[in-house]
Length: 266
Ligand SMILES: [Zn+2]
Ligand SMILES: [Zn+2]
Image 1 (tube, rainbow, N blue to C red):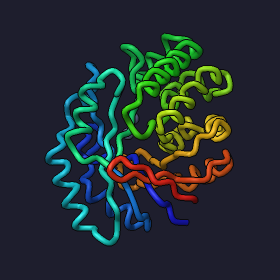
Image 2: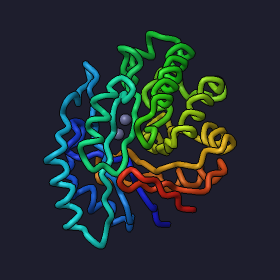
Image 3: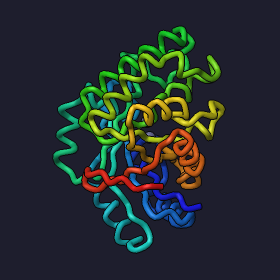
């Protein structure tokens, strides 16, 4: 089965990835994938390890070089993963206005001064409080909008799983539905992020429960993202993501070019 897209991946232009862009492209081609998009971290939160790491000029130059090298074999989109776009709104919008991105992912990696990748955060707070606060912050972020795709909806479970085990989104339904409402109203697609399926958490973010609510509320826009930081993970488990999306009642994949969405049935 052909995986039609992978819109969430990193290269050595992100500080947590050592892989040249071309190696990620070759991996996609070897898996017969027609379209990928790079989404490097653009982080401004103090304490963030990738802070101010992303350099758009050399990145676009390398992207263009890859587009030429792999022309006719692979479509390469220019994405960006913006951390906390609601807090760094001016910087985020300036970045998007200045360069020809195809799409922007908005990511919530921090709740106040706590990183959701810090296991001590989850050891120090009850799950109800930490997860609840996350969704409250996510509601603010999606209400403001200004990006095209919401990254890894409930990403905290990747780290929190080691402390609390799996979680039940149903317990947070009243906090999650307003986030979905904002996404629908602002035309924000959901990133079906499969990185959590490669680890113990064994959960796609978002999973079936949240996607069912989204479809039921009239949501249609989803994109696929393996969040690969290694070539072998490009496209990983995206077949499973499509199966879960179908099960949830979703019918289209959203493709982006120059920040215009096209919905394609799958
Ligand atoms: Zn992320
Ligand atoms: Zn990422």
